[in-house]
Image (spheres, rainbow over the protein chains, first blue to last red):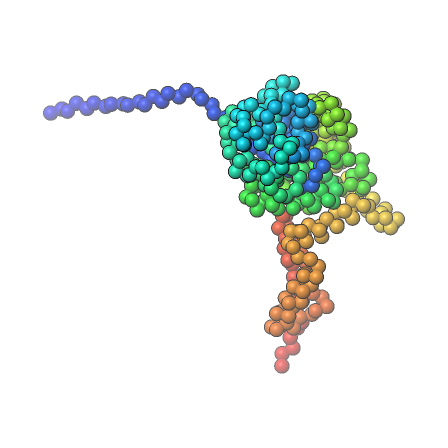
Length: 288
Length: 91
């Protein structure tokens, strides 16, 4: 007797509607010491990412001393702020100021009349979780110091960029902050050396980027040369990154591209010849 | 570039002027070790004495050539002890 065999092939057809959900990378920019360029870096990297076609939400977490709004030239557009969102006076969308000059760029400003104890690290985590599916990047500008405000700023971060200047106090504070970030298990920080003056380095009057890297022993993500256009562009509320010829602007654009995963070597326009050669070696060894 | 550096090092030695950047680096090295370990020079000396006391119980050491230093190793600190031991004369 022959038994017929019936093979049934069941094919499950998934309704694979490509619903591409975004999940933002959350980056905090901090320094320990004040005045080394956290806000300038946050503004410039954010705009550079937006110019690369990314959707970016930058958050000023320096409650009581807000400045990211002025650096971006958005100070007249603030209606709601970070504390309004956290205390439920508005929805997040209402506090996100859309920068009309750069497609995809948004700012959530800090409150000016409150202090950093008005929010907690878990508030920041919750806030970032609420928007992370509708943006590519969340960049958080941290306040100076190692207290509550700083803890709030790094709580949601997946990666922390530490910014320093090539001077003894900024490097010392950067080391402290890198140690704290390590102990908070945020992974290794990446370093931005800001306001490097190649002429002074050449004359042995300023720490070389190589020295700073050796002392801090972290990965480098960019070196921003001293450039007076940073100040003049802040004067008019237009980040220097939009300035085609600015060396600092170019350095910030390169940082943004490295964050996107592009392998951008340190260019000799970022710094002068000589320093560049030694640095590009270190940079490559750094695994970028 | 290297040669240029050596030249300038040589030049600064000759003129007796150390460049302020290298002084900054040297100072920072010590500052960071202190900050990272929370051990100051006095505490380090006390610790050295205690280490030597313990070792002296077992072997005779050449105290004048002992080197105990704290060094950087990436982001870690390492306490390196180089303790010469005196030859023991067998009776």
